[in-house]
Length: 483
Ligand code: BES
Ligand code: MN
Ligand code: ZN
Image (cartoon, rainbow, N blue to C red; front, top):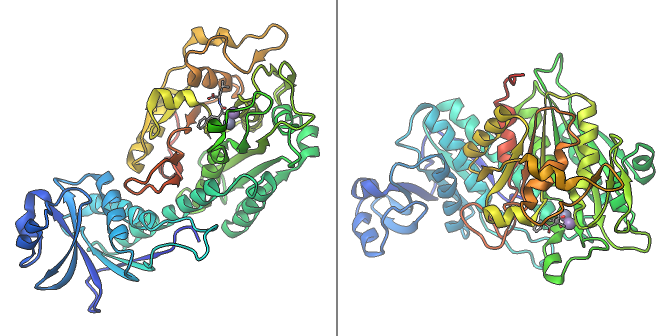
């Protein structure tokens, strides 16, 4: 079970004897901390700092004080939520009364972020532990004025968190268990549950459809590859048509250009792009019912079996481009080339891809920030705004023309690595651009933020589900792009 809690909304505090979390602003310490606790809090070093918590006996009963910092912004509410559910791990039920000072749209946005934080702070992955570990928390009630609007915001935040939890589970599952076939199976179950159309290509169909990049990477594995296509089709004419593409390498050994032991350690997470797109697709019918959204997930592992793609082999991508494979560890761009070509063929208004594509992007931006590359400034801005609203760190990177020459091959149309070692994230982005047929496109390199080496804020150690909140907000707020 990904997110082990349920969250609901109430207009007033319940009468039951239950742990109540109250918000305390750093700049209103005396007024916000109920009863005698201001003094008590002072003794315990509680200053109302953002996401600081303290359980205190007050005149009104036991209270979980949670710091809101000074003038909390939307991202603060997510941290506050996570801090509450982490502090309440021994309670089956916590009531959260922290939004009192807010009104209107600010209250709705805060309630949504708070619910996301509350649910994600309770997340744990225990599939391989016996007995399973995890929080005792089962039920969370957010108390706030604001009626139906705020109730809907809480519900939206909770639903988003469930999708994020699903992605985390997929990313955390070992590559030997989450094979391409197992991943496709999960996609089928979710498609049924959420009313999405699904089409799954097996190895023979992948070859027959000319997906030479995906077939070429899969040659080194006894595991069957899959190409999963999911569609949300609205009733009536769609407001717009958007394609999502996610890199789905279920384990990246590097192929014959084998990785080092340390470099391979976390490579079960190399399908995070596909998992994020799948998670976002489960939200589409609810958040963007009027859009036609299609997901393309190329799934394979990158192994070094006896008939693996050799260094120097030339693969033919779906759109006819030939690629000389000079490093089999640059496999993500090969499978994405096919998926982007397929996406572009259906002439969507926009394409967004997510991929754990390069270590170079982590060198550039660190391990919490995704790199954004695009051929369409306005679409790029939209995605950056959506990321901002969702509290996911993202930064634009350029696609410099002079690096494109480095992808010219002596014997084929392209080579799959640049000719010098600089700007690896950008070279990868330039490679992908060759397959979108000039359509508005954003590439998100999520190699860093898709997993975390330690827990922080609402993020657990391991898979983070990064990108779901950005995609959900991007699609929910969709309007027509300028030509
Ligand atoms: N999956 C890796 C990128 C990666 C590295 C993701 C570290 C997360 C953490 C990708 O397939 C890869 O191996 N990229 C190479 C590209 C190089 C061969 C041009 C890299 O980054 O070293
Ligand atoms: Mn690789
Ligand atoms: Zn990879």
